[in-house]
Image (cartoon, rainbow, N blue to C red):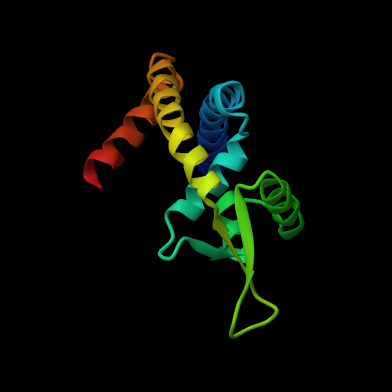
Length: 149
């Protein structure tokens, strides 16, 4: 195996490790958020993204990027959350093609109720992952990034 092949293998191993950590965390978050708040991880992600906005709204395109979804998947998700009364869509005054999305009061309440669950489960999942030899160095790196921020 040449140097170039070694670099490819190192990147591949790193990607597999990252994917394994992501899957472990997402599985735990999904289970807890569904059980305790009837929210999926991606629904929580949308509520979280909207909660962080100045003025508390985002364009649909920005929301799609924040949730790592396609435009059509974002539209379907926003429709479901709107049907549940958690968000609302607002037409942009200066661009009638633009649509903003923002949290409703019910969306804020659900997000605020779910955030402690999310944070607790994330902390527990990272602690569990830190005990797995293959995942430990990545967890340590994540923690060091938080300390530096």
